Amino acid sequence: MNHSNARINYDRMSRWYDWFTGSEKRFTEIGLQTLNIQPGEKVLEIGFGTGQSLIGLARSTSETGKVFGLDLSGGMLQVANKKLSRYGLSNRVDLCLGDATSLPYTDEFCEAIFVSFTLELFDTPEIPLVLDEFKRVLVDGGRLCVVALENKESRAVKIYDWFHSQWPILVDCRPIDVNGTIASAGFTTVEARQETMWGLPVGIILARKYG
Image 1 (cartoon, one colour):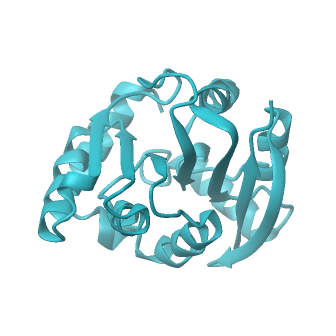
Image 2 (image 1 turned 180 degrees about the horizontal axis):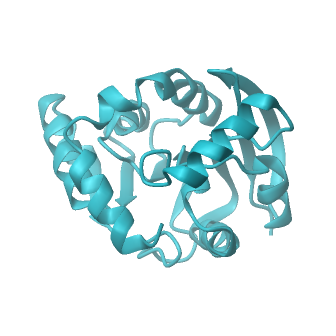
C-alpha cells in the first residue's frame, strides 16, 4: 500500500481502531515494559495510532521527560490528542504528522524509540531507510523496542500471508524477520522474546545503537 492510500485508510479507521486492534494491546504492553522508560528520558513513538502507548510512555517519563510521536494519519493524531487530553497528559507529549523514512528530528535526538505493529507496514525496500533514521536520531547507547509480526514457518503465517495478499488494506501488516532486520541495520539486540497472537508469532525485540 502506498503512503497516500495508507493515510486515507487510517484516517477512515481512526474512530474505531482501538476496537479493531484490541488483540495487539497485550503485546504492546510487553514491549513498553521491555523498553523500560525512565523519568527524564526523551522517547519517540513511531506510528502512535490512537495514542494508547503514549499514555504509558508519558507517565513513565514523568514531568522531567518528554514523549514525541509521529504518525502518517491526521485522523489518528486527532484521536490521540483527545485521549491525551482526557488523561491530562497533553503537556508531556508532542505529536506530529510525518513519514518515518525521513524523520523531522535532529541527530541524537532521543534516548529511546518505540515501534509497535508498525515496522511491518512499510514496504520491504523502505524498512532499511526507516531503521537508518532510527539510528540517526538515537543517542549512542539509545534503545529501540520493536513489536512486530514474526515471519516464522507455520500454517498460521501462510494463511495470514494469503489474506494479506487478497485484502492488503484490511490485513495491512505482514510478518517480517524482526530480529534479523534490526541486526542487519547495525543495532545490537539485547533482548528477544516471542509471543503468539491467534497462532501468529509476535517478536518483541529490544536493541541498542552503539557507535
